[in-house]
Image (cartoon, rainbow, N blue to C red; front, side, top):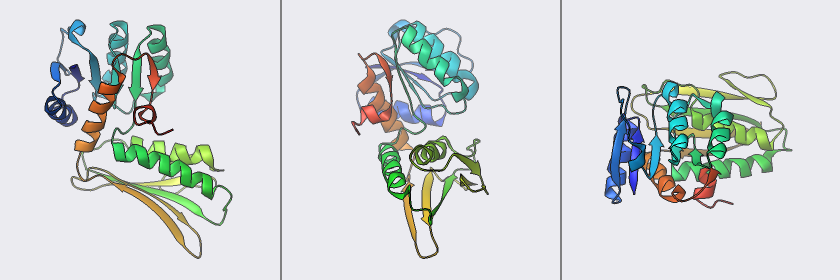
Length: 233
């Protein structure tokens, strides 16, 4: 499979390593200064670029019939436009805030637990996420996805950084050293607590998930999620 990398930072380099180990070919490494891009050589594009570049990358790929796997956060105000453009061009697209296989199982576990806790008002939910000091966005895209999963299945109606009023989920964001990513969700009452937690040991899991998604999407048409890739129901 011929893969184009949009964004060639740490994640791009790790995706390259994983892709090569799975016998794929990297046909383009598109970064900030890249001008000439040959879309005809691409079977699929994997975008881990900057928020300012991500939407433009998607448009170009859809217009040239190239399926896209996008893990860039910070551009989602244009997500609906990207979906519409993908459908208009009969393209293929997967966006995920986190491509880790374990995290995507964790997303499902989070929603399942939220459904069970829905009517247990004595439990108050809170979240914490920890990442490396170079991560700019707070909270993480993964934390937002987790919060949205709780909101969808409970009486909570929003999330907020740090302290939150009743009806909103407080999210504490910490930036410590080189931490790849830790997310925990806690339901606490006066008598006990229930906690679920996902801890990434390194960043290779994110890269592997993106490559697996790229392998899965080739030849398909439509807008999908990692839930489709992993057949999580």
